[in-house]
Image 1 (cartoon, helix red, strand yellow):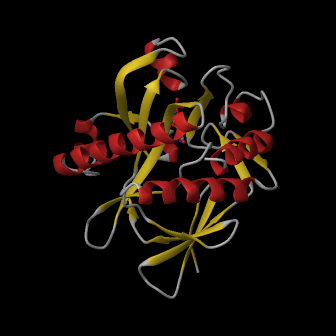
Image 2: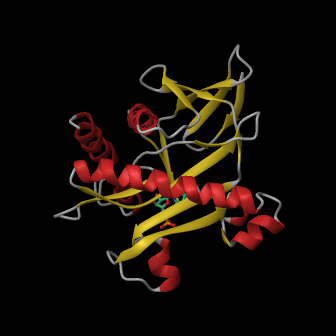
Length: 232
Ligand code: C5P
């Protein structure tokens, strides 16, 4: 049974009440749905790439909602209640932080920066402080600390993986959920839809900015990224 449909994925219940099946759609959106296109093969690429990232994280000892890849477009995951926060980690200035705070695109930060955005389409996912997160009743101090701890660990591992592909992990967005025992688990996806990734020497984009900025073929870009990942 369909339990949730988002912009890029559908979530289905399974025979096991603690397990969901996620299907990746052939759809791409940007700017909270302002730009939207059907794109054959996109669901497959994002599922293959996300599954590989989750496998690499599991091998490195980071638990997540991921159980296994079922097919080219589907995964089995543990059922979690999604915490309505987009957790963004930034290593290099790009995107919204250049506009909001005037950082120059490409400027490397001394330490990774963590930001929270409130997942609320009607409000356009506003950036929020820790105090807002508490006031909104989304998370308490302990949960906020745990989200930050996991986000930094995940950043370290993803930066390692990208370095091995001669790529810089500029920034990325992750989401977390709580399982039935209240454990906070990494959920959602990790793909060129949710990360900014630049080739170290040429600064070529391997991410959704090619679609956001109309600078190239999204399918070719994601295919090239997937091939690099497979060659690891
Ligand atoms: O737009 P902004 O610069 O804040 O995005 C930071 C990172 O978070 C980028 O890698 C972007 O792809 C990701 N992001 C996302 N989903 C959103 C907003 C941002 O995956 N709704």
